[in-house]
Amino acid sequence: MAKKQFKAESKRLLDLMINSIYTHKEIFLRELISNGSDAIDKLYYQSLAEGKTGLSRDSFRILLEPDKEAGTLTITDNGMGMNKEELEKNLGTIARSGSLDFKSQMEAGKEGDIDIIGQFGVGFYSAFMVSEKVSVISRAYGEEQAWIWESSGADGYTIKEAEKDDVGTQVILKLKEDTEEENYSRFLEDYTLRSLVKKYSDYIRYPIQMMVEKSRPKDIPEGEEADPDKAPEYETYQELETLNSMVPLWKKPKSELTDEDYNRFYKEKYYDMADPVRVIHTNVEGVVSYTALLFVPGQAPFDYYSKDFEKGLTLYSSGVMIMEKCPDLLPDHYSFVRGLVDSQDLSLNISREMLQHDRQLKAIAQRLEKKIHADLLEMLHQDREKYTEFFRHFGLQLKFGVYDRFGMNKDQLKDLLIYHSSTEEGMVTLSEYVSRMKEDQKAIYYACGESVEKIDRMPQTEVLKDRGYEILYMTDDIDEFAIQILGEFEEKPFKSVSADDLELEETEEEKKEAEKKEEDSRPVLDFLKECLEDKVAEVRLSHRLKSHPVCLTSRGGLSIEMEKVLNAMPMEEKVKADRVLEINASHPIVDKLIRTYGEDQEQVRTYAQLLYDQALLIEGLSVEDPVAFSNRVCDLMTK
View 1 (cartoon, rainbow, N blue to C red):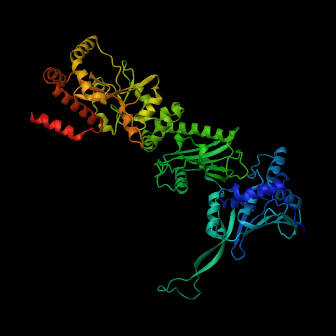
View 2 (cartoon, helix red, strand yellow):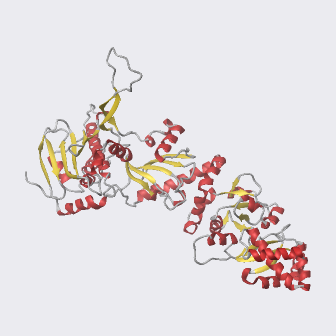
View 3 (tube, helix red, strand yellow):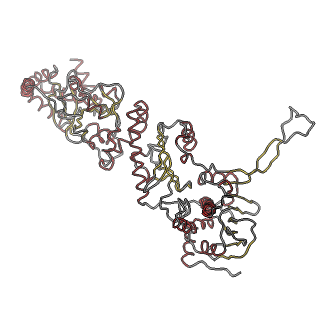
């Protein structure tokens, strides 16, 4: 029979298919199995439409037959099959989809919801990525004659009569010879085929079967007894094994599933030793229909906070895996969520491997984001202990989400933040803090530092504690950046304990006393500033300190804590906050400075350096000249 030629555009597409479209050659098996599943669906729905009740889903299967000697892999289904015209139409023109035509016809006849995986006709041609020749033997439902379609690629194809006893399609792949770059013979190994079915086609609704070689102890002949000192003899045998589980866990009713079922599935699929802290199983029907099974891990993966971590949910279309990690389904601030989405409504591109960024995908992502937020909020209010443990692992990501993109997501995430409190046991929300604020309190006070213990000892916190104000303790590098982006909560501004103005109410008597003290000490304060030169922007008396003599604060948008964080990064130019040296107005050191200033200004110069170095140490900063600092202390001790 004369060989027929593909159309010119089909030749180009076939060349693109073989060499470019699919990233992984192993995808061919998923495509051919999906085509077989489609063909079985067609026959099943056709029989229902004709009122024939002799067929059930249990009557169908897809069979894999590797033949190492012949170098062939055969995929057989007992589905609808194709006649000569259908082979010509569906396989002779690339991107012609018989599944799409069938679905359109059935929907036009309003035969109910038809779930056909194959919406495009190019998946079959992925077989040429691994095959030097492809043969398709098919016998259509309701016909006696079978036909064989054969092709070695872009040079064309033939169609001729063939023999086939039953209805269905048999795809025979003559695999390419192995090369240094590619091992094609691996697709004939039981282990490889089993793992590929598990990875891509585990939830195809029909059994995918293969004869596998197994071993068992030989039976002991009748009348003989087993020799306890002799190792048992084994024999090999062939057994037909079903490779796929067929029914996805997420398709089962939630009423039939237990926590143990969810936990087992999560641990097996994501190789985690710990149970998830939250399971979100949702089924949405409407303009976009999908099922989602999401897990909030109990602990962060070892690479979570590294550049190697890849976010994303596994994406299925009618049980067939399309993408192992689809990043577009999760925002960065929820990148810790693991799980999957199964939808038959997504528009897929010609390879099924990559998604068009269409409205359906975006709609699913938006709904998932809202669902995750609602579930985390529910966990926060119903199980604070579990949420606190979750926040210990992933709170950093939520805080980064507040800061990221100039606070675009801050309104969504602010209710999920929790912090250590100076007055309460455990961590508290911003809402809880505001609900306890005193009547005269104008701001939400916070303090940043290396640890809760060190923050609690900060001199800057003394006056607030003395007035009974609650302080939020923040220990992550991102905290102050996120808080500045957040700006306020329930119309209450955030105020750092190290800010230059704490906005505390003072009595008239306190104001007069402060003004008198400031006037008396102004010359010495100016002299201290002169001694310290550009190390500080200002030296002033402080009324925020109680027992401590000195502290460092800052003015402007860059705090001292932010200075530490930024300078710890690998940047050429270092930044510096506008530092303010504050001296406790009620501490004896003030009177000592005033007296010494009138007697020995050089001694005051020494005091200036000592006070500044003390403030640096209290703030957790390095002393600029440790040797000079040590010498000044020794000089004072010997006087």
